[in-house]
Length: 442
Ligand code: ADP
Image 1 (cartoon, rainbow, N blue to C red):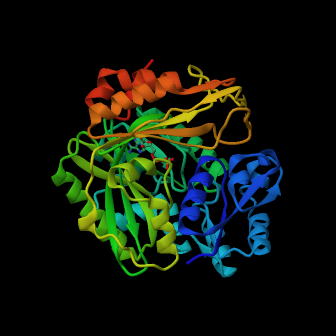
Image 2 (cartoon, helix red, strand yellow):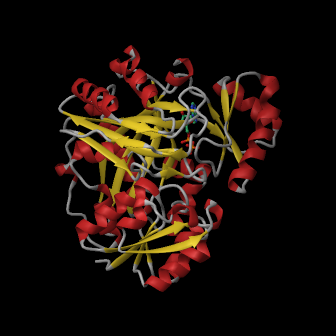
Image 3 (tube, rainbow, N blue to C red):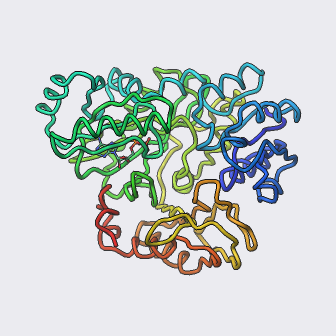
């Protein structure tokens, strides 16, 4: 088992990992930027070390500084959290070269799945249904053929994409070239890789993803699905498990396919296979080789601590849970609480002058903020996650409504009111919403 883990992240996910380490009896090292000197993850860790100035590029993405911190503090594992370096193949490789365990999959699996074209090919080879696509976009007649086949609309996507960047929906023929070029430019800027590909654009799908957990002995289990269709600009806002529209049969069918594909790769750790789901059919989009922001809803309905399991698997332990132990019980919803203006969505950093977080049965808040905390302007605007759990969906929504009403965050703007409105809509209440929900919501 690990003795000391360095957490290469900040905010709520750093705390989440820290808490799992504490329960496992593992010491922790927090890294932080100059702007995060008094952050909660720094206060709660056993040791902390500054890795650079405020900008993420100079601190949380600063590989040499983080490796130096890991060596100085003599850790035997590094947990990347999500975002930042969590899906950076080179980071995982360098850690491996330093004889420190990267708490995540092998770097080769990060590389394979980091390229969405390759990932789709692997899934395709394993019988997992994928979104119909075209990988080569330089040949006009191939593009014409593809469009004739799948019909407009199509979507241009970045092969190395993430965070909803480098995507362009194409509705008309004459816009194709522009869309490809502008997606390429954005992809180059964001991911230093201008490779783009085309996909059929599904018009009314849900985003449904399957959580998997694997050890180093070939054991793979699936932990049900999350419905993440409430999104703005392809970024998730609300997630829930289970999805209201999935039958047990469909769930098992897709879970078995995911299990088979992941087993064939020899993948280790936690991972998520993301699908679009339309007309009772699944279409694979991509696999995330890390812990997801929305992992808590799965933890609530399965009763399994995913972060602990992830750490145990990385430590070389055999999975102690078998597929038969997994039953989805009750219902869980997560609202992402962002420091942003509720109408313009412009980030709203600043000092939290008053703070009260909700509690009570079935209410979980994963956050690293507190009264007096200054939300820095340098990072993502998500300041916490409010998660509720109840015996069934309707009780879970009522609990979320109550918890959102109780949540007090003053001094900055948040999207709490927006969440209150969303969960009370007829569409959300029915569970039948799709990824277009936010485009008509006001
Ligand atoms: P990223 O890795 O940038 O988050 P994804 O491939 O996971 O990108 O897609 C993010 C979201 O974009 C999806 O959840 C969905 O809402 C939308 N999207 C992506 N591909 C398609 C598609 N082929 N048809 C319709 N919507 C899509």
